[in-house]
Image 1 (tube, one colour):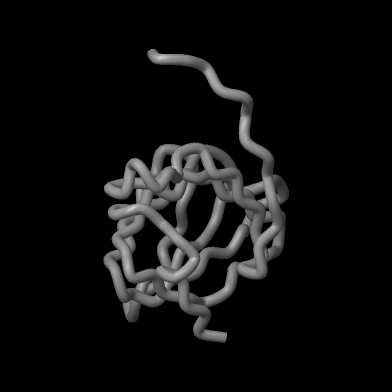
Image 2 (cartoon, rainbow, N blue to C red):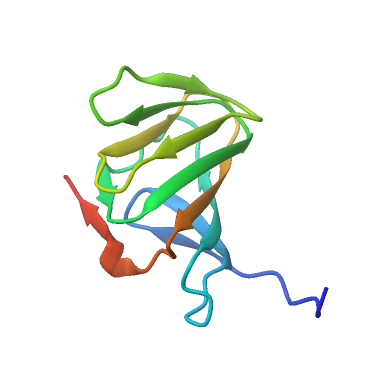
Length: 117
């Protein structure tokens, strides 16, 4: 460990969720890691990314839609892979916040996001 940094601030996105970016640096273009928080009853925007993404569910329950496949129920410990260019969205189906890590390869930048709504 080369040093501890101050916890990053959470911010609201038009995608209808809160994001905390933990690793997203220009000098590390190969990967980014963020935490998403979706409030109960909320469905994120349908969108595509031009990068591969993995959701690693850490708390709560939800239903993920990836491409034309049937929706999948997810909970803590589940991982969902979303290939680059694939439609995606997730709904919080529980009574508590749905929390998950978003791991993007290569790194997420705003230009990689396209809303389908």
